[in-house]
Length: 459
Image 1 (cartoon, rainbow, N blue to C red):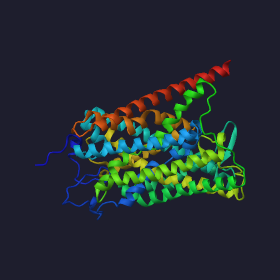
Image 2: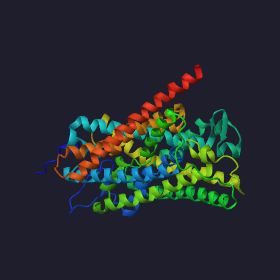
Image 3: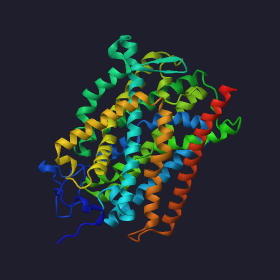
Image 4: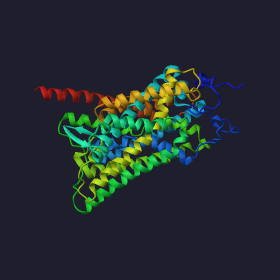
């Protein structure tokens, strides 16, 4: 008789193989989801899926964050968060194997019981919902344009075809939802998205390459000045505002919710650590290049969503064509990132609402009901969130730090399987201290800035 681990007993009535809640099989068993002949995901497919999970909308907020911190501290912060992310993911992988848990929430259940699992799933839902709302906002801005401080930055569809009812923000997002998102979010196995993930990574690289090319040309022509290397501090408010950039960087690395689903579909799960390292190296390189060239190119004019900077004259030949290529390539990239983040969102929402039901992949009615409800909520959120900076600060300062750092560190300190080392505990305490302190300061700074601005307006 096989005794299920405590973290997975709630799935005891489930079929033995579930695409949305993959099961780790014994060495003499094959992975054959739904009898489809699927024998496990490849390493390259896993690298692309994980890289796509990481490089989402976060890359667009990084140039503004680095510009606010100063080029040197900003780039160092990106590298530091990358190293912490690798450590936190390693903790999740080791403790999941020790506890024989199949999901991140299962690891939390082993450490803290059902309450801990529910809190983690709620954090993942908040984080992923926030990220998908950001994706929608950026896609809408790329296609239809956005208005900032009374100035309208045109979108590519609006510029190509003029202003019509079908080029409005809402109409274009509805078209995108029905004709792009709907087919992609209907897949019930994360490995099915490996080709779109590879394309999305390639499109992100195209964005970086074009931005770098523009900077190099303008440098050769002497049209670019020296970027600000250190932060600009003019008063106390500007100092505390620096901390609001940390949640933006943290959000850019959140991929923990997809780590175990990707590992569970691998032909060789022992390759997961190598896959994580390759993905983080690739994504950090893209982040550093994007931040560096974005700050050098736009300086203090770098907007919260750097894509909005690509709607005017770049000061080089074929500027309009390059603007369109940048915006279209990254808009398409986000459309392809959307389903892989939605995958874990749907799984965790279903886990919160129906913890003892059969896996959602085996219940088409529940699968499509949850999918439609979530898409409706995301569309509404994209219509009311004022900017991606607001969304990044909210999700980054709350749910993202919990998912990425606080929970992995707390699970390690709890150490139910007894595998944590002294170094693990030291890193865990550092993660918790940095996560709590920076998030507290970021939220406090946001509140202070609101009252500070209101005070200046009324005075």
